[in-house]
Image (cartoon, rainbow, N blue to C red; front, side, top):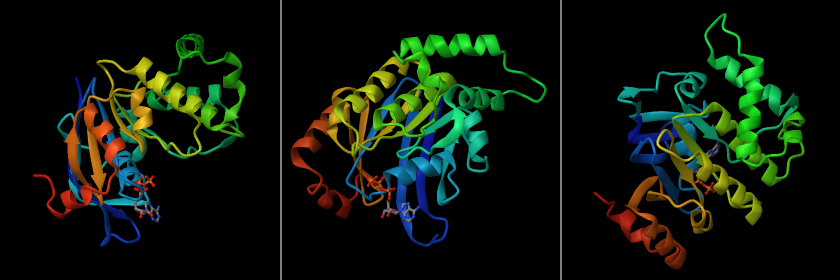
Length: 256
Ligand SMILES: Nc1ncnc2c1ncn2[C@@H]1O[C@H](COP(=O)(O)OP(=O)(O)OP(=O)(O)O)[C@@H](O)[C@H]1O
């Protein structure tokens, strides 16, 4: 059982550290839980997830992020990844010329200690088993990472990475724009397959739509850099119905 605790986190762009985007967010995720973070555009949802993963464009000016009680703020992004934190990007990069199979193999190899070699036979066995579980065609792994991928294929690649890396915590920044309902379903089915007592998920999303397929244990609403309301899955339905404007009053008097 692992715990990821975000404690009173304030985040700014590294180039403008005096202008906070995330203005004091606290959130604790335990293994087995799915937390959804919703909120209007530009409220700092992506900034929060990138800061937790250690993205260099963002600086944490106060607060802390603790993995099993230990601060991760001094860790480089790759160390955080090795410690079990997986960040799925809203707009993943292309890696021309590098096949998915080789990319995943390199990612797994990078996690091993010096002098240790990934067992190739075991690797392919595990890769194919996970692809079968996620219903991904085997031909997919010979394609270059994200090159010319459709929105749905990018999502498949992201879910496969997650399945292979077996993180303790997945921070998933899911845009709904540009994704058709099939792509959303790929994400949802993937998360539902991987969901379980060993995985904690922070799922950032914009519309309640995705949450029809992934039923969250907790829903948090972010508004102007703060979490102004938390609740269970019914909060997502309330937001779908009422929109976000009513939360302006909540920001004037932030939730205790
Ligand atoms: N790298 C960056 N450069 C410049 N501004 C940035 C950068 N990252 C975030 N911002 C600004 O910080 C604010 C919060 O952005 P962020 O992407 O975190 O919001 P969001 O809640 O995820 O929005 P969306 O729902 O549109 O994805 C926005 O005003 C955005 O323009």
